[in-house]
Amino acid sequence: GGSLEEAMSSPAHVHVSQGSSSSAHARARAPSPLSLSFGRMGSPTVLLVLLIFATMYCIICLDVVNPWLGGYQTAQGCFHLLTFTLLMSMALISYALTVTRDPGPVPAYDGLGSQPNDGLGDAECGDVDAGVKAKTTAVHVEVKRKGNGTAPRFCSKCLAYKPPRTHHCRQCRRCVLKMDHHCVWVANCVGHGNQKAFFLFLFYTTLSLVYALYLLISFGIDMLHQQAETKTSSFQSHRAPLPSIARPCFAGALLLPLSMGVGSLFAWHTRLVATNQTTIETYEGVRVRKTLASGET
Image (cartoon, rainbow, N blue to C red):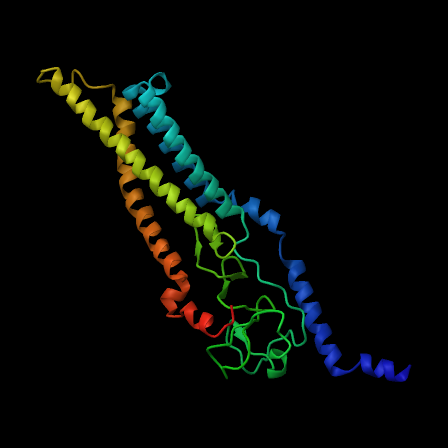
């Protein structure tokens, strides 16, 4: 009985218990993933993006395709409406998945030595004992680039090990696996869990914006041709009503910069996907091929 009590009160056991309880308290303080997902849908930036989508769709369908091609009453109008609706629907579905999905849950590890070594860590990550590294075979850990270069990375904020390509997001207050960046327009991080949805969102949004620009330009050219065929010197007397002209002009002024911005972002992320990098790794000069070469992924 006495030996059992002494073993239970040993420093090593107390150290593990403290680490486990600290991790449990950290998880208890964190809000549930479901509440975070639906909470992000109410973010002002997310609502603004949805408003832009709705505005562009209504203007293109009601003020461009309907008066120009007759909407669903003609084969050409029906084709353009269905195509534009399909592209916008895919963009919105991808956007919703990007906002609501967990950007990158970090695999849990509850082995020995779950507390960082206070004498070696930096502001975000601490080093752990060399003996702990031998016990981390169940989880891939990345050797720190700072410090003594022999201990796995540990996040002192999340009280958890940081696998390769994991970073702590100050806005989300959590570590994200394969974190690319924190995007204010989705009110979420872009990481391993939602990178595909984010890439598809950029892809379908770029197609939607370019297609909308094509419809607007074609509508404007056709309207000018119709005015020229009237053989009148007064364009004002034969033009369409002001509301039907003002809204397409507003849409064109909004579509042009949006197409350039989203298109450039899509090209950037296409390059990142092709080279298997993230935005953070690109700007920090950290290349994932070093991790792949060492056999840690």
